[in-house]
Length: 87
Image (cartoon, rainbow, N blue to C red):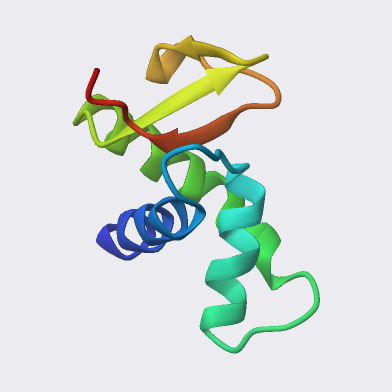
């Protein structure tokens, strides 16, 4: 599972502190990084969401639902992740 945390955190760092991304986008990026094609990324969506929850619980990422900060295990439906703010 560490593989997904590293991949997701790297994608968030690349996006920068002012941007968020969908776990689906991170799954696509992960599949591309492994040289996989077509719909292989779909297998990574749920592991990427689980990694996002773990990183949010650790305070490294934040999860947003409809633009509002959400508790990691309360996130349902469409949600986004971003680097956690230090303010």
